Image (cartoon, rainbow, N blue to C red; front, side, top):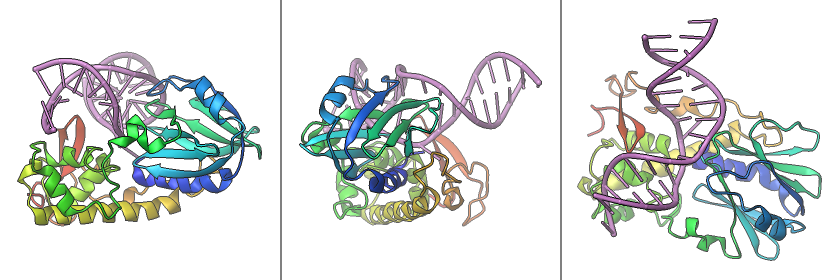
Length: 273
DNA sequence: ATGCGGACCTGTTAGC
DNA sequence: TGCTAACAGGTCCGCA
């Protein structure tokens, strides 16, 4: 599930339920996630602290607590957070409960366990996993010119280049495919062979796709008080992702599927040069 | 410094 | 119908 828009939507969905609530208990049923969940560190530092806010950085959620006690959540490939309560039965893969003073529970569910739940110290942005991240795609810092400059020393294909979190965060496999299609750039093109003007086009489409899908996420995933409030993602909007052998929407050529950096890549060989 | 492939997991589906 | 293999929206790490 989680691409940047879902992480953003998750944050917005749970924040009103948890803001200014005290953590009364942390229940960890499965601590083997991407990294071992630091059980005692979390319990010692988080219990009895009030949650002041949640921010998103890349696909990480940063929970800010009083006394500068903060923790990070990453949803990996299959993770989700929902607001629930003691009456709800615990389902398979419900790994962590953060019990709040209003008796609500922030419940972490993650079948593949590629996600993470980490203590982030007093200054989360300096955490090892956050400090070397590239700019946020929706920020002013991210532009065609920025990409062009960064690409000068890179021979890697442009799709893997924009999926590199050190270059820019939050562009997952779907958005990489979609924005390259909209910018009419072949995903195999070496990053250092793309002109400034094409990078400007690409940066523009990355921003547009993410923005429109955050809006979509807001409408399809708005109910965070029930874990089932999901609905059909925003698949209707996709132009090339998962469209192998279907006609291109602009030229009718059949969409190709290749593998780049071990990830499926969909594109139109006629429109994307 | 950059690029590449492997690793971490379970669930779902395509193909025989 | 049932088994097996391939694949899935992420990203870090170690090695060349």
